[in-house]
Length: 139
Image (tube, rainbow, N blue to C red):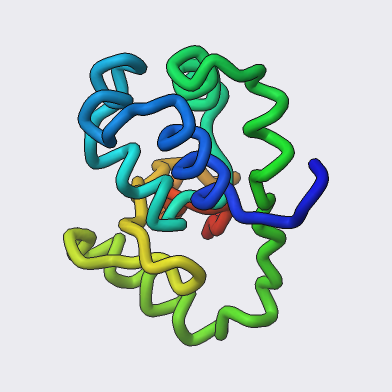
C-alpha cells in the first residue's frame, strides 16, 4: 500500500477505474447494491472473507489488496460504560432487541439469550450481543 487511504476510498476508486457503476459492480460480484454502498460510505471497516473475495473477483484484484485497506477495530471496552452494557443485557432479557445499536459504530446488534444450568441444575439466562459490522461484543 503506497498511500494511506480508507477501504471506502480504495473500493470506490478501483470500481471507477474498472468502469463500473455501483449497480454494475453489485451485479458482477453478487453482492447487493446496499453492501457496495455501505463499503463505499465507510460503514464497513473490515469485510468478511466471502465478501472480500467476491469484491476482489469483481474488481479484478487480489483479495489481499483489499485486506490491506481494512481497519481492524480494536475496541476499548473501557470506552463502553458498564451502565450501557447492563442496559443492553436487561433489554435482551426482556426481549426488547429491535432498536439495540452498537456503541462503537451504531450498527444493529445481533442478540441471543444463552440458557445454561448452574451447579444446582437451575436455569441461568445469559444475554449476549455482537455487532453486525464491527468487533464489539457483550459476552
